[in-house]
Length: 328
Image (cartoon, rainbow, N blue to C red; front, side, top):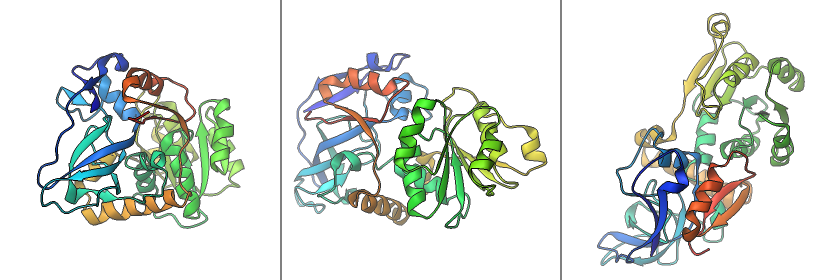
């Protein structure tokens, strides 16, 4: 088997990781051997390789935190998904590999007929979008939500999930070239960030009171979203793509009662019950299988191409996700 391993972290993420050969393991009792079909490279993976993410595995480590695979064998006297069944790979199991071992009882079966490339991306970005839409404000069909980084992976899923729930979206991007792609995804309103955003949002949304904002950029962009919210609105931050801390005018807090919250999926995983996880992933898997929920894919790479893959994922401008498809 092959896997993408790193023994150090540094500012150049692709320099830290390399493809290595190792024997394919045999599953022990209670385990399943899974052939990895596809695994994405997320921004958190790049940050992990550079050493600045909030949760770092001990070294040496195999890259990849999510993906999808097919059961190829079970350990002795082991009950679990049948051989040939498509399954969701456990979070953080080192998915940039041709094969992984996992506890069979913890594997979640997925629709065999669904696109494995789309299923591979369902562990991180879709639940992040789904939970931010539901955990902070009780939005009703017909209401609006505003987000920046709308051309990101989470942004695209949020647009689709909002539409499935009867919500409308104002989508903010940082460059004009990203507008068309967000509109194609289904964004109701797409605007380029900058001065006067709140006025442009109000005009585009017909003066609707927007109670929920989603921020992945930080810096002045956070303040632009806060100013676009109705009094008492909630702004949820889940990233800092600008590299700057969130900035919000004190007037938004003092005079307009705006609340700033944070969301990190890893923390939600720790506190969620198995039933809560199953409910979230069950909805997402069904929508992917139906073709209702999908993400743009820029390119796929094999394990042997891991350095090129990480370099592409770390690049500033992309039009879709980078995925590892171990068999190429």
